[in-house]
Amino acid sequence: MNALQPYYKTIEGMKEKGLYTPIRVLESPQGPWFTIDGKKLLNFCSNNYLGFAQDKRIAAAAIKAIKKYGVGAGAVRPISGNLTLHMEAEKALAKLKGAEAAFLLPGGFIANIVAIATIVGKEDIVISDELNHASIIDAIKLAQVKTKFIYKHNDMGELETRLKEAVSVAKTPKSDGTKPIILVVSDGVFSMDGDIANLPEIVRLAKKYNAITMVDDAHGEGVLGEGRGIAAHFGLQGKLDIEVGTMSKAFGVLGGVIAGKKELIEYYRQKGRPYLFSTGLTVADAAAVIEGVKILTKSKALVKKLWDNAAYLKKGFQKMGFNTGVTETPITPVMLGDENLAKEFSARLFTRGVFATPIKFPMVALGKARIRVMPSSVHTKKDLDYGLNAFKEVGKELKVI
Ligand SMILES: Cc1ncc(COP(=O)(O)O)c(C=O)c1O
Image 1: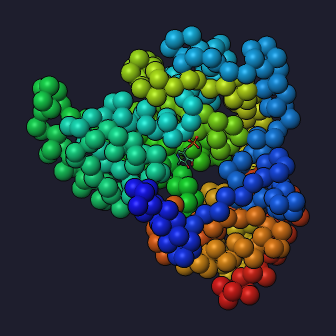
Image 2 (image 1 turned 180 degrees about the vertical axis):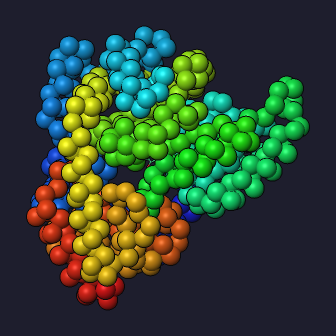
């Protein structure tokens, strides 16, 4: 038997349990409506919060940059691929976030790997929220941290208990004689539920116990703090040690960012392996980031429209009797529980012209399947009504409401 055979069997098992994810192909741009299998569908599940993925101003800026620079950086940035566009984009992002410096990487996943695995090693200590993003979990694994504490989601009482334990562990110096770092890491906005980390309390506790703070603001940039992100939302600019973000959500392109003090960013630039050994952003991505920051800085209209749409949608779902969980942001989960129910719900939405994929294990815990609806500022009220109506019909058919 081929050694890979068990993997293929796993796929069959996943199909039986409703855990298999068929991946659809988009035949049109990624907008409020798009085409799949020749069918026009309302897009209810992208992270394109502000419509930047098709914004004409951003596309024009990317085209202009391509005409000047070509398409790619051609090398890792520390060798010969560091473009003025990269530097400009970093400056713009630092300013937007109110940080001393920022550092662009090829993706948010990679940014979390760099942010954690570059400064934390086997003998350091990490304290992490149980619902943190997979990239944070993998970064901690990669760092081979022996002492890690996972605290109950957003439970500040448990965080304090863990900090006390960490302080006690940290009394033993590392083999090189230095003191272990204690890193507290949390998503800013939790991507599957839409709730927000209690960042002011995390910062207060971390300070009390001399720990380092890190937040992943992937779903906060362009959304919270009038588009400036979670630090601005809580008035914590300059108070967080490490802010990670992504250009793949509200910014509509590709890229990851780490923001913080100049010295920290300098350290990452010299030591971050995925930066040293992986090519920098493409010309189009870097130019799009610069233009995106410009748009966000000039007007808050798109951010306001996003929140208005989100409020309209949530009210609509709740009025019909759907459970939208604990969200505090535009992320709007329609909680269904059973994996097969979520799959069937999504399939019936599809036949009614609404595209909203089921979110299920391993993206969320088993038995906590849902359809995560993502409104954007480019949806019209008519679009939202269309989607709400489809949910109502399917919800009744499947006896969810
Ligand atoms: C909270 C969070 N962090 C990081 C990432 C990874 O970002 P990227 O898609 O840029 O790799 C995501 C995207 O799924 C995310 O939701």
